[in-house]
Length: 152
Image (cartoon, rainbow, N blue to C red; front, side):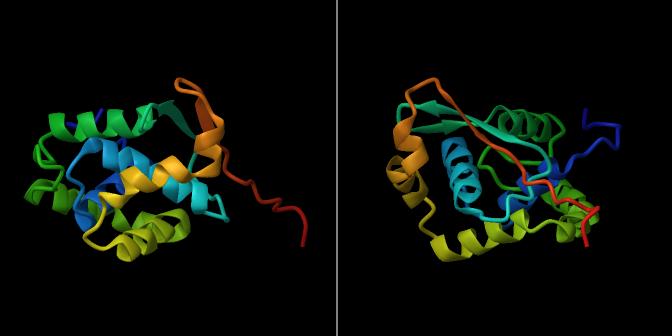
């Protein structure tokens, strides 16, 4: 989808922003971070439903995984989950789109709170109430809240 096309979603730009700002060492940490960000977000203005699969010690998000694989295939990110020069150019060209949604900003606020301790995400997810209720293999879905534009 990425090379030679202009089919980028807001989720692509969100993942680019997280890789630009955060220092994720493992893909697992990125999946768990997205889960915690969605779980703690009260506004829920996601571009589309976020679907996670519960694993033994974390979660898996297929959309995020596909985006990461596309970015790697297009040579925008390194194996170390950091953007290269092309990835940074791509991010800067699409980053203004994120200002219309509050979820990316809450992700940045969470990144700031964790600082260099993103490894804590993999531990903290184990104590999330919704995560604890589900069994391994169950889906955890965060639906976006749709605003009624017809009411004043």
